[in-house]
Length: 264
Image (cartoon, rainbow, N blue to C red; front, side, top):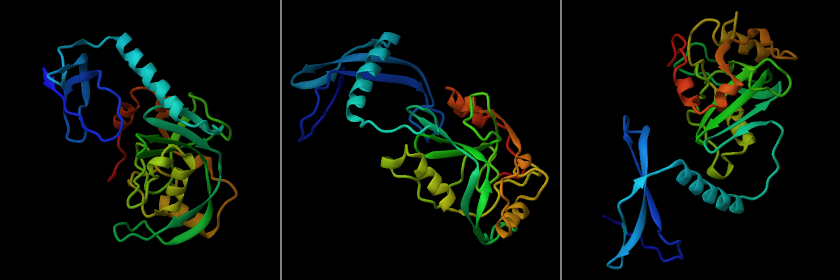
């Protein structure tokens, strides 16, 4: 049996059971990359101490029961809030939303590590965008050509901005990401992205960030003389649709995308 120690000066729930997860750890960044199976155990008080007793394989019924009870408690604690029509999908590990085409304040800052960088600021046109956060920590950004609400079948395009990798993940650098309290607020992520400085393209492949034009030259021209609309003909397609962002294997899909030339 496994001994368990739990001490607290505040009132706590009684320890009634335990779940043990078995799998193979392949990196130091996570507890376990792949879980093979799980076992459920009762906790018994033996000699005035709680101990985990021998268990059995977890079933789908066990998982459903645990999820239902925890979800109910979470729903009780979670306040009712307005859901904007810009939200496309929301789950335990991610949030997906979109913003229509328009104009945004953009700051460009010259970087000593990139000849393509420059200093400047203007209210620039931007295309409609699809945003996704994963684990309330990582921001991914894509462009779409439609002006209305995207559907799962809507084709995604490379977000034509500096500081965005080919997979769509945003390099946040030294920017302050939203706090835990605001991690599920789209505006907090939008403010972080457009409030930071655009320093350089994250790859050098031609026609991959802005089709037919050098990205730095394109944005420099927009700073000097912004156009009324973003030219969507300049967007480069990626092998993703909006629906791919809400699949169980989204992380694998993103990791499997071909990296652009010169990505760093």
